[in-house]
Length: 457
Image (cartoon, rainbow, N blue to C red):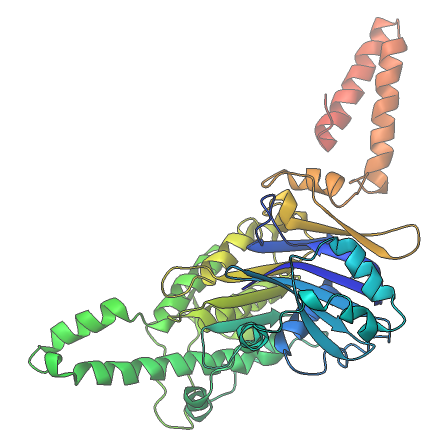
């Protein structure tokens, strides 16, 4: 299941906005990037997507306090079926339409401006999917204990709970065992949910122990040696802490740190917690999580938590909503950030069935998207937000994106702009000058400024 389009009408800064999540061939995108000035609604859109995906049967508009004339339509591709889910705040009801509606723009306008929505809908009843309604309803619901997964990762909160982890996140085996009864489809990954991450880690440690016991007692394995059993089981069942070490060490190595895999404990009693730490590579001294830099700590916990939710699982229907993933990270972490996220959402079969939506202010991250994967949000003359696709090609110089997609005409500060004006004036004087001595002096000044500020000399 993939989202191909989202339309919002009469809600907050959106008077009537259409967000196209398809490639040039009309196929739903694997990843989408929202960019725009503060207040243009990037986080609002992620919140709406999270709310709609989380609540297939609930009160759709109650969470956001929509006005009575608010409308949302979301176009979804489910295998070969293409549908439009329409949400009406006026009647607090949802309809499922076929996406093969003729004159779709005219249809949308008539329904969303009608005085009597129910009466207007009757005129389009032939497009309402009645026969397949129950089947489709079941398909769009994200179900617990299944191959469905929705992860929403909001921006860092004002009070970062990561800083309070003086030892390890607080949880225990007993909390992890509850996941055997019910493993949720929907998760929030944030500094407010750090214990959830640690609980899932313990769950997979215990799950592997159970699977090993079952494997070793199978009739065909009774006569095998312990060495054979260990090798056969390990080849198909990776250890989650080993995988976390591989993931985290790529991030930590630049800071001279590593995950202390060899000293991680195996929690046994119900009240036991997982004790696993970071250490200095040079001296092997353990470092407390709250002593790590804000950027590194936030990053390893966020990617670690997301990774565990995909670990050794088959995911057929996945959504990852990332709000400002660049927070507190040095630029060298950003150049392959999307590659990192695309790797960790691969399921156990190596398949990527997750649609990623990212909100960012950073041109380095935006450059990792195709122009048609970038949605630029901008204020229009009426004071509402419009949307259009990006211009700069994937991998373009971030400075070009700042010009083309972020619409920043001047990338220099005031002092830099003053020096640019001085530089251009000196060049004009050089052209006009007929005195060789004056020319030599001007050339010297021009070269000095040009080299200092990397202007063209």
